[in-house]
Length: 371
Image 1 (cartoon, rainbow, N blue to C red):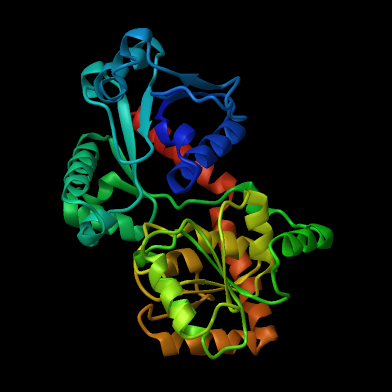
Image 2: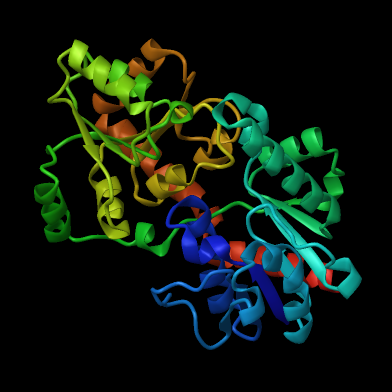
């Protein structure tokens, strides 16, 4: 098959959505090399992506549309899809071009989350309107909708009134770098480079209100441990710095950012506990990364988080500081329990392996193609 992908974020997003796009193309091209994978990129990049080449083909707008990239993405791209004999077009981040049906091109769209609907205060009025219209139209027009969690599927049904049987849940995996085992020498190098203590707890993700990192800072105030926070800082970070200063916790909280994927993977393996008390997510890839790293996980007890964390992670109310404090103390004081839940978590996370995810996507492509 010739399968086309809306690939703006594949080339121009270095975090969540970009990682999802690149990881999907990586596993599909590896597991199913008999297909051609066309990546439609509205703006050429200066950096070459190692995945591009052979059966993975980058496509850019023709000269006439180089100054009208959005028009090309939304409408004129269909002419390119016809010329490339695309059988299925997959919108990887909630969008689809117009007029696919008029060109007899089948379509699939992935919806990651509807946080902008559930928590509108986190978005501008304009962004909410644009996201809602794009996502709703895409889910209505697509032949199949892929949700990255059961929680997201339920939101699509509730907010867009899409029938359940049109939506397929396919979980995300994570990058291969988080599945590797690193040597003691590599770990010690990272420890020294970032001046890490021998024991610490870890949180990974943009430091914003929804991710709720302040509750971790509050929870460790009276615990003998160090918190390492990894992620881009936002205005919300000021709340953390203010609390840290007021309670003289400067030596107990370490902020890191711009780590390489390998450095982050080693950080997970060095940590005693990974804590993810987010209020709401479409899925929660850092949980998967931690489970692959054989690191004990404490996360939120509702929404999507039990889907990602499995039956043996520790779950808490993300608004209850005392509950989180008790969970941290319990795991730090019981190494045997940490070992037990990491082993069970590692067994659980195998359901997110590349081969399984690739087969689920290919089954979707074959099903839609046969309609």
